[in-house]
Image: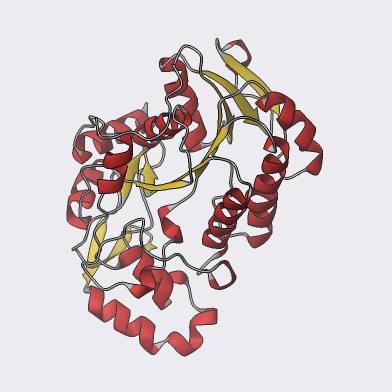
Length: 332
């Protein structure tokens, strides 16, 4: 293991509050926590899935984080917890939904946690970086400047930036963990491959790493942070140790049966087209606007040195094995 920060809470005494417990990441965190013997207070907006009420070591808390009335219930639920993993957020591009679920939800959670002796682990996103500043082959690291909330390239990124600002301002000891494109059972595709037209994928370039993070890996890293007080605010990107390029990804994903056809287009050609169309950018889809295009398609590197230094290495299978498992589990 690498050098670890802060004081570790023993697994036998750990108890965490988890928001977004029924989401893709939340479910993985809950399963991993129980496998490690960590008790969880699972916050969910709707009725729990079948069997959750009987799950050993799990306490359910029904609360809609977008509703100010949730604050008292959240505070009661958080009492006795050593950490909070905040995974609740709106994943789409609906600005109103982002405002309610991501920003207001975070604000209400922080009101509930005010003054409690715990630390916060925020599930942010690697999408918050200002990659428009970069050139092909550059590295996306924790030192890269962020986009500005007011000029963020889409509502999702604006919401994540606002979440981070709110959490920093709370004064709570804070981990900000920024996963890459999270994949696993039921979610094997990502926005870094290119636009789809029916059975056809238009692949933008071939070089550069994909910033992939398997959902099981993300869950383990979040729980490591939950069990270790950060002292001051610490920021880490979460990416898998084996990061494929687009060619490797498409070969591994062929088992899904999609895409049927791939049309490769050179990255410089696509970028040149977006720059020519920039006067019309307010009316264009993301992949014809320079900032979203560079964030998703520009060939970049995503080193994990800071992650390994702070939390140590984890043993993970190669990408092809993880993708094959995800595709197989999705069929079962």
